Length: 364
Image (tube, rainbow, N blue to C red; front, top):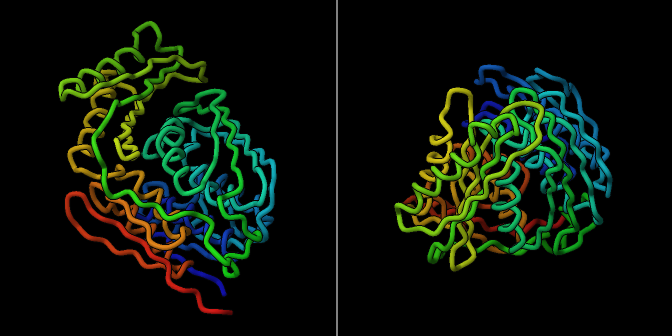
């Protein structure tokens, strides 16, 4: 039975494609997404969406219909997820963090190691998780549920030329399963995620990255110093590493993360842009992480969006607290429930409690 998804629902962005294609690969259920990014300035598939779809399809020997730049409707007929070495070429500055979002679940359900080498694209992109955020916030949190992946940045890439080089490696999940047989699982592949008590905020770490083009005006140092100044004013201990990267064009960004006494990790980031002072880049990242700290949440609002699919694939009851329930999160919940018989419960507040429990699957 074909699952049909409205690509313009709520947030109406590429997250619908990423979550739907990942779950189609995992469950073996074919899907169609129509009205893709209908409300956006440039509707339809962009480069990072297309490459993510193609990579998921290759990983599970699936078949895509109408998968081309600008398409507003696609079909995906998944096959069986198998170990592979994927080579992806992105000719634009598409965000590599979003490509990983498409692949992150299928990567660990292949039964053996999967390697993905990507040439092109950006490690820091607008409206996307920077790759260093994924490495230092998302992946450490996912280790708690039995998920293991590694990302190596060989070369940074920035808008508008991209040109990054990144290797992603996914390893078998905690509970091995038969590929592409979700409906036959004797148990789900991950441990539940319990992150309700934030605990005390410890040291804040981070990186400030700039291309070598920006060494003379000390962009990396200025971003780092501005972030530290804002956070130290609140009495927090901070260490931000400033570094320069060989890149195809000028660009910069900051990623910060705070680890708490209960093991929670709060992240934040900010992107350098033409005409935007370096100090503002650092200050934005600092203000973002301070807002999450002040909310009392165990995850930042961007991480909450990314964890929902893992909560749905985990044994038993999972729970996190976030500063708010974003439209991204609401959209992801809707897509997840099209594929999986799970229930999400939202308790609004400061912070907002997000719970997920799987229902018993009917025998087939």
